[in-house]
Image 1 (tube, rainbow, N blue to C red):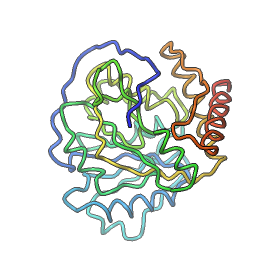
Image 2: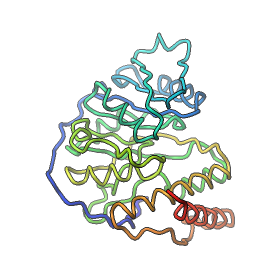
Image 3: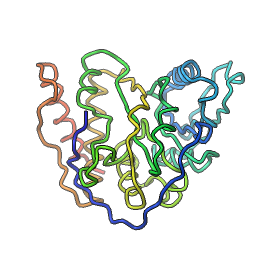
Image 4: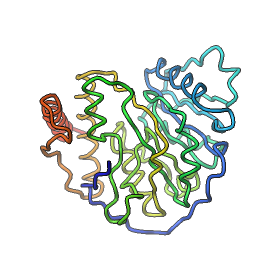
Length: 292
């Protein structure tokens, strides 16, 4: 289900790039920042090679760890039909890690995801089918679990970008969410990639989407589905929305937007969802008022 954006950002068009059509998944490099999630990496790789047919695998997978961390690849990864590379960033946040990844990518297209995501059989091929000349695509992000918190994330479309209502088309997202977003590498080079001044995992992908809209079009690729594992419980729920609240304040200051958190009703009405919606609002408000 689509929801219209409340960000209200209107890009200052600088150019209108048209990307070449994607002919094969072998044009795609996957980039994944990893922080303290060895198990997530193992689950992701296992699911990827179990769900994707060999002709639909990407060109490469680039894992980017924080400074001082290491990623252990599964013992059988030497038998995988796709190259897996491990790089290291300087530890200044996910924006830096993703920049390290795409700048070292060999593919024409860069597919961003996270280590707490699980690919499905449609994940890669659907981007080829959705290719239409846009410079970036927003895939579908659904919940992996079936607990009440995961169901809330799913019903709220928390990790799905809303429709860009200025575009007048349900095919255009307002921005991208890097749990499942494909971007033309040439476009990343044009805008300089992610803004490394945003140190937290919140707002950096929205900012990227806003700047991409200044030079080309974004589209949805809803057939591309990845599952997000929300396995960190209520405490993780509060931390995530506190971070999102802080990210919103950063964006508000950068783009002069009025996006202070406000109360809202859950889209699926139940006592549990009303409670979670209230906790979400309070957590975002807390993050909004946090010091930079």
